Image (cartoon, rainbow, N blue to C red; front, side, top):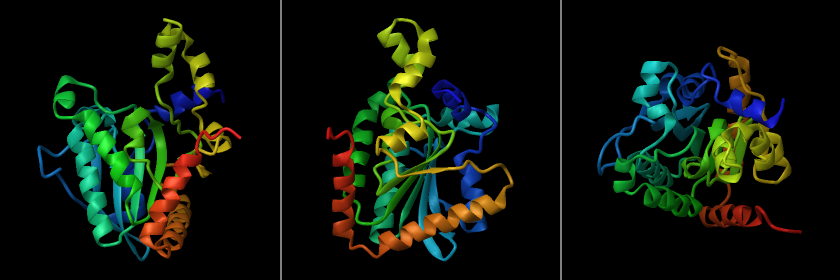
Length: 260
């Protein structure tokens, strides 16, 4: 598959969404929590607490929706500032109780409407980056579809970042990049290759730690394997003192893009 084929696969409307992953992995143990305690509850961000095997976990996902009605309600996964503030509220709660944080990322980017800008979209994203970098509890982010710009990295300042084999992660969409560089959005396939946005590209560059095979709907054995892998990662990181964990996370990001 070409890089642009991967982009199309990441955008496939039949893909599993964050809600699907949460249901398959947490079942009835998941309790959704709402609101940013400031303005509203953003349905593009799903968050709460659940049990992953025997580990209590705070789980947060960017949710696009699974049909037209849901996608309208979820704003196609484009979160508003209150969505990122809700996510941060849940992360700080997790830190208080030393619960690990699991994030599922699937968004073309943060919502860029006038209302979102008026309510501090840029500030909300920047605050998440700063606060997540210093969280004294384990954080793992998994890209299950699109990972677009600041809207994605606002939930991806983690100890480790994993990607499904058909997920993508980039500072801009291929169409947006092509429109800026060549004034021609039809050159998106060329832009996708240049952006190095596929899971394999990002693994080779050291931006992510692991590539996962994307589970099919109802493929419970694959979800059980993923749960076990996540639990082992959390158990390893829970044994590290909080201050040291934050230092390691900072060092991880400082190494990205370093010229040898």
